[in-house]
Length: 230
Image (tube, rainbow, N blue to C red; front, top):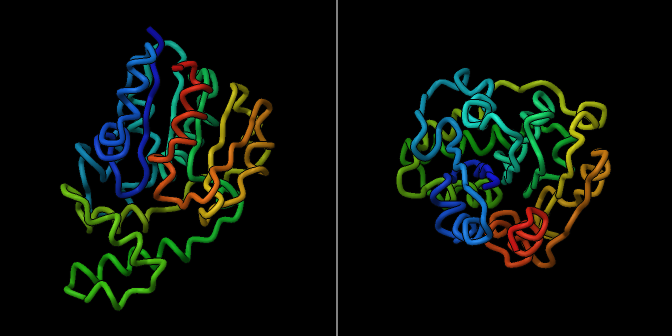
């Protein structure tokens, strides 16, 4: 049975992103074995409060890789971490779906992450959520899911920058890659990212924002077809 690894985004988990939406079950109905990964600081994984602990988020993915090449789906932080893993270990992947990343891969601006981390810390200190900037408030609301550790999530946002990802590095990933992005996502467009892969393609989801991506029927259809699960 072919396996598909699922990697959630910041503030999510395997359970909240992939099981609750029914996507994992649909993969299983399509004859795939599912490998769920919780990134460090999320879900069932350890949640250190030191930002330096999050210097290499790929370790949780590498540790979960089976011996044979695997297909994988990542969303947002999970997608960018999956991309870094595939660049370092291109022979370990058969097909990859990257959702919720696009132009942000090449436009490395960490100011937004710093604002979100500061916003989370202010909430921990008792600040009124309504005083946060709207762009930060959306992330803060998403972070406050059951089981989340706001200090750990702030530390993830403050993590050291990893190696620079550019078109030359991405060209090492030679398996088929599908990039899925909502047209109302702050990372839109994603055509440049898809074009950087030797075998890349892009699907844009109409009227879809970042956090709605993994619950979109358009995402389900595109990803399941690409993975051969329908």
